Length: 327
Image 1 (cartoon, rainbow, N blue to C red):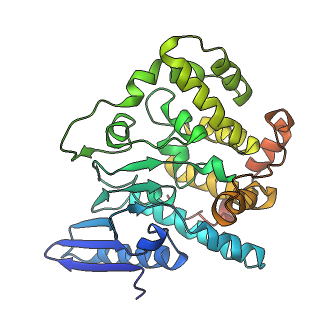
Image 2: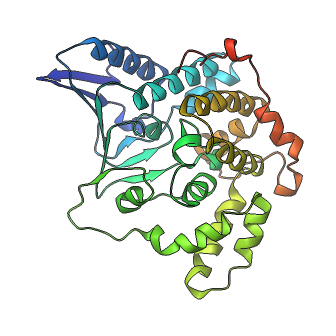
Image 3: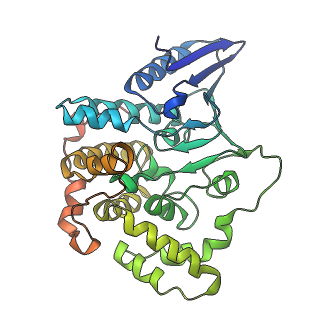
């Protein structure tokens, strides 16, 4: 077994430690495969009643998937990226529907793939070091790993805000948004998003990203102006195409069953590799780190309805979908 994933069973509790601290415990393909194998085995093991997920190193539970490796493979012509996401989404779904209690210790950074393996847990524990986000639009992606489901079911328009803008939130806000269950911080904190909620619900209720931007630009209330300006600045850096795709994704996800959300997301991820902003975002933000992605198109005005619809065009018949067997 790889040292990237450590496991032990003591009494009735099985503990899994994500063990890539230098990479903030980013999920490699091998880690996804091994965690799937372990959950399959423990599901049949009568000794095991509870599974605990944790991250090594003290800085992160899991900062996401190993997208650098995915980019390298894609650039080299490897088809691994297709298999990676099919395995990841099936694993995420398994955690949501697992017959035994799963506890996720969300200490430190929790982003992307880390959200995927934790949002389906029976108990999601956060604390003073929790830094949670779904920042995918910043690298030309959409909030996947079940984000269609759990973000679209956050109170009001909080999920749309989190999915489009990708802000980092702490423990109190994670609880407030319904993305965590228990805060073990020594000092109770007031959720920052609670004070912003009236503005978020107003501006992010618009039916298009352009309308959201226009609504934010119209904000004149003193208590929200600084936040609105910062939000506009963040949106201006995101992939225009993926902002539009994300809004459509969350709109559709709000009415879909969990399994259908994952099937939709696998369709979307294939489209992301075809469209190009995902690879460009990884280059600009994570590889070369010039933070100057060349999005295509470069502005919201260039994103057509047809371009967005292409992301959602079915790539498989229902029976041949790679995730056809999840319920």
